[in-house]
Image (cartoon, rainbow, N blue to C red):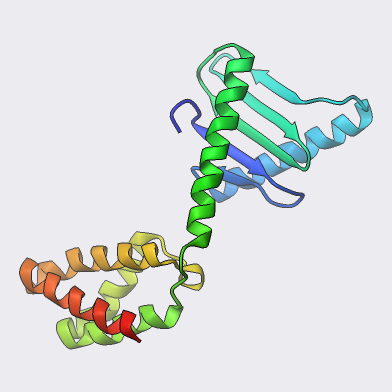
Length: 183
């Protein structure tokens, strides 16, 4: 996101996607949208966009029922240019999200199998290394994808290399990956 510091999308009532995501920002943006929607109902005018200009930038809302798009930028360009840039960035973001959604899911049991196998190589360190790398990778085990799994294995390899050495850690992760993915 080059032009916009934050982008938000609400596809339907109830939830807002904010990129880069922070839970409290998502709730704040959703509340702001609810207030805007209620105000627009009272005005009863077809409004396509609302732009709030501040001393430090612009907050934009584009209404494209049932979706609402928005963005926050410090750039003060012409409105048409800002709107077009926001729409392009949102389309790009949605394409990325669709790709991730289509990606193969990895069941939680595969991650647990990695932890079991890790015990054979690093013993008592396995549980701590496993939990730390899951946390550092920011992986939700209930919704993990193949790229999440590979990201986790890369982080795990870096962590265990400090215990068993770089070359051996690469071999171990390769063995674990082969065993877990063949099942």
